[in-house]
Length: 379
Ligand SMILES: Cc1ncc(COP(=O)(O)O)c(C=O)c1O
Image (cartoon, rainbow, N blue to C red):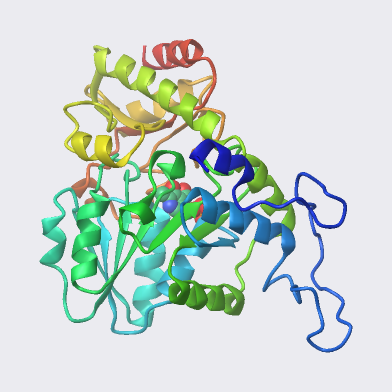
């Protein structure tokens, strides 16, 4: 099956009870047993739920994996990955990443004796220098949030294979429509399903997809033992989102490109971060490992500061000023005070997350309206 067909049919079966085309919402915590252990494959909904299972199968299919696991949020999915480790283990992570990921790494897991090294990965060779005997996992986010750096997944996978490490890739920004990390050598793909996969800003959810049986077993154990699962209603909504992922992503990419080009030519704009520009340092890798450049971009206005950036985002009328991204509607954010406020200012600024930076999640509205909105807000 090709990708667009998989978004609609991948991992799906007609419901065995009545042939429902969409899996019913099995809003139940438990399942009747005829004798202890005598059940139809489902015992308790923290462990398994048929609606969640349908979603997990769909996620595995669109990421070219074998096993999908859905969680109550993207951070719950990240939490499960780090719980594969033990005190004394070390993680090498992208240095420019979602603020909440940085927060769970440094504020939660460092307290349990796991060490994180935040490393610029634009040059994959840089990673190898940081590997020690205790390194167990490489954590990659690409494109990065919010600086839109591109990391060469294949090159990092070669390093992780050579040293027998796990490689996890946060594929939230790209989605499997644009990039399939398991095919590039990653062991674990992670998603904030909240974003493009859900696609309608109406749920909070996370996911992991893997190919390897043993990693899957260990993660299913953690999913059940820690219990941060998503409910059946949200699983249904996420499944519905997946069915239009390919058409939404196509439009996100078209609109993203139009807005990136508009901003780049604008006399009041200093810098636009979007991996589809030929002069973007990750352009060649992005062209190779992605099927498009996506609808996320960041920019800085000329002579702008914290106050100016806030003024621009407050002036927007069609773009909504809000946390999050990846929904059908366009959103604008101010990373320094919103999504990345949990990263200390000195750390943030090292990677370019300055006070004047604005991040856009370009939606699927008419792009002319979005450009007019940006025009009036910038003027
Ligand atoms: C790249 C990335 N990873 C992970 C997360 C965390 O996901 P969630 O908010 O669903 O917990 C986010 C949220 O913004 C994100 O942007």
